[in-house]
Image (cartoon, rainbow, N blue to C red):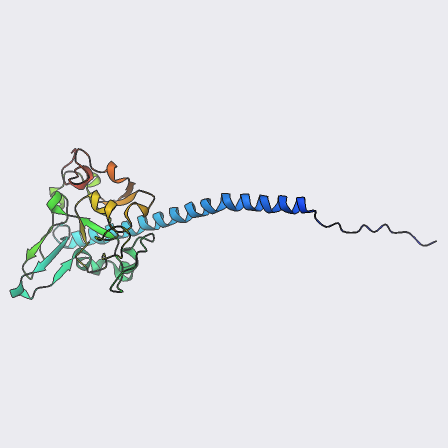
Length: 241
């Protein structure tokens, strides 16, 4: 008598089982999407920090070649000297090599830009508000910036921060390489009300200090005894304010 094999027939999933699987998948997707989004945002902020550190290295190479003085924020030549405006990023171009264009843009700064030139996210804190970035109408020769020796604390004085545009929040950006419109910044109010506003890093901005380190803050954490319109704290060359 030949052997008898008991062959089980495959049983299909019931509707309840199928709905259970679909529900579980939906829950997992709902959990994972925000996590992945946060991971991507964190990666963009980390790359922004790396960019600003590279900017700090370029600035210090400039300082070493220019009598221990920081670059000017921007200067405009007098008409008799040919006119035209030069910004800080133009001054430090020789110290960037091939990384200048990519290093001056935060990955989270994706506003459309017109004309179609290379975006620049970072702005120098203007000396007119007590910061390190001098501006003005000057002679043909590049001017002397703030002397490192005049700063009370390199580790407590911010040199650059993020400013995606000088236009209203959500509009196209006018902060681009070589452009003077947004190359300097006066206060946290400029950051909050312009460009991408508080959406760059979830309500925080990166700050590059004169000693080369980069730190993330909420705008209100940076003003010391000042205000959002007239900040002190890390925005000025004086320490302890």
